[in-house]
Length: 160
Image (cartoon, rainbow, N blue to C red; front, side, top):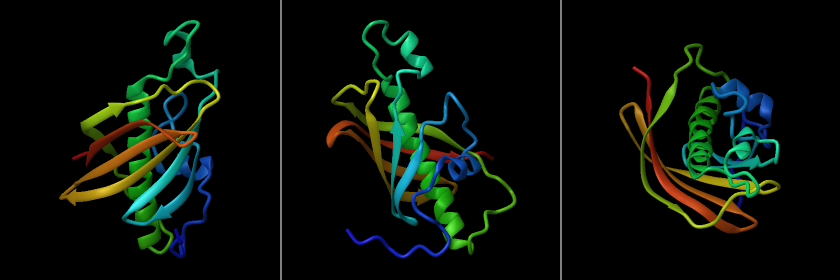
């Protein structure tokens, strides 16, 4: 697929830029890098899953598995990055001064087909399905080594 020309966003988007665009921090920042972006349409991001993730301590001892809700959260964070990077691209490379928080408000059609374990590289592909007023619906897919591990639709809304 040909990547559209981006004027103000430089790929790959690294962690410093991601931290400037999302309010999440360790241990809840679940996107390490963005390698593909079609502003207003789609994004591809990565989470390198380490054995040092704090959730592995209790989920599950001796058989570490990334909780499915965190896989969904990682996909939702990619959706947030799609919105933020689109705004950056559309606003001449300048982020709006007033930071707007978006919250995950609905998850539909969640399906989990494989486990995510230490050493996996979680690849998240998120498409903007539609926007309605101050809300955005994203269609999400997460894979590891090309195999689908989860899919869902998420709805995020701007804080009022």
